[in-house]
Length: 360
Image 1 (spheres, rainbow, N blue to C red):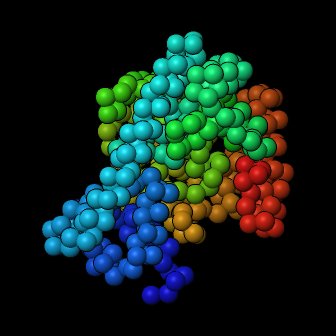
Image 2 (cartoon, rainbow, N blue to C red):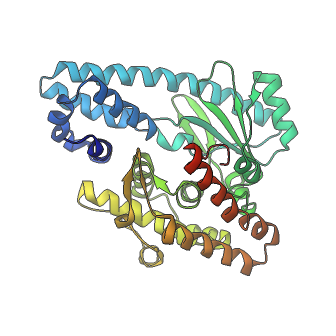
C-alpha cells in the first residue's frame, strides 16, 4: 500500500469507526497490519478529529471479540489517557464559567462540548462582556497568560489564553462571531437563547441547537473550508435528536446572510454520513434545495476533508457579502471586505513558509 494513500485510508477507517461503530470488525485486519508508527499516526488522527473515545471504543470492543488482546489494550490505554485529559479540562471549564457568571459576564461554551463524550483541543467561550474585564478576570483568578494574536484573531475579536495546569488553550470570543467578526446580532443569540447542559456532574450553558449549527457552519464553511469526522458525527447526532427548529434555523441564518452555508453544511453532513450508514439525514426540502453543493466536492488532503476554495468557497463568501450589503450593515460589510486580501496574504505565507498561522 503506497504511503501517499495512507492518509486517505486512515480517514476512511476513522470515519467507519466513528460514524458506523457496528462495522468496526471490518477494520480490525487493517489495524492489525499497521506497525507501531502507523497505529500512532491513526491515534493522532483520532485526536485531530476529536473522536478518540467514539472511534477507539468500538475498535477495542471489536478487537476483544476477535481475541486480539494487543489491539484492545492499545485502544483502552489511549481511552484512559484521554479521559484523564477531559476530566482535568472539565474542572477548569467549570471554574472559569463560574467566575465569569459571578463577575456579571454571561458566557456560553461553544463547540467544545459538542464533541461529548469526546472533547475539543481548545476551550471555546463566547461572552458579550468587556474585553478588559475578561482579561483582568482570567489573569487575576487563573494566572492566565494572554497569547499573541494574529490579524485574523483581531478581526474576529478573539483572544486566546494559556492557563497554568490546563493542557488546552482557552479561546474567548468577545461580542462578535465569524471569520471577520461580522456577526453581532447572530452572536447575541448565543447568550439570549443558551441552554443548560449537564456533563459528567457539571452544568454548563451552551448555545441552543440552532446556534450550534450556526457555529459549526461559520467554522467549517466560512473559515477553515474543511471537515473533520467530528463535524459529521456531532451534527448528525444533533439532527437525529430532532432538537433543531428549522423555521428558527432559517430565520436566524437568513438574518446573518449564511443560509446557503447552513444548508450546504447540512447536506454535506448528510451525504457523507450516507456513505458509511447507507442512509443520510432527514432534512427539509428547502434545506436540500438551498445547498450549493454536497459531499461530492470533498477531497482528502493531509488530515482533513476539504472542499475547493474556487468556486465553492468563493460562492459562499459572495452570497454572504451580498446579503450583508442588502441588509445595510455597513460595519459588517467593511469587515467582510477585508477577507479577500487577508486570504491572499495567508496563501502567500503558506506557499513561502508552509504555514498561514501568523495571519489566521
